[in-house]
Image (cartoon, rainbow, N blue to C red; front, side, top):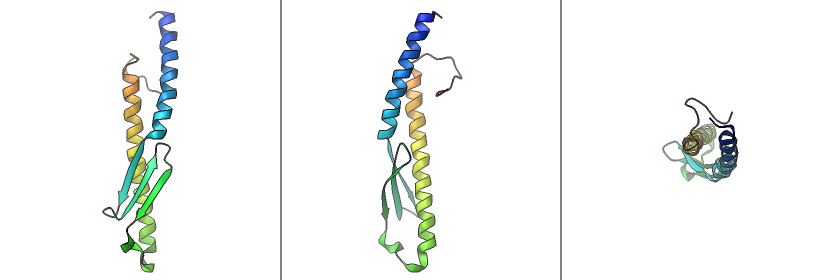
Length: 106
């Protein structure tokens, strides 16, 4: 492989990584638990953007259940965000012609 070509690919990869980071912040996913009684929306950084709780859960005896459902919904959303980030990364890296098995970021 030509050194200049390799340098050009490295510069292209750096630009695409910057673009990927911007795209990641735009990704949103909804996580839910309790059959949809608790829903959260997370951004690509894993920050909770919104929280919806079904009014039927507002009973004093159910506080612990509600807390567990919120955590479960957040976890569900985070798993979806991670999958979205992985998908975006694979799409971006697919066109670079990197050697098989090379993973990014380094």
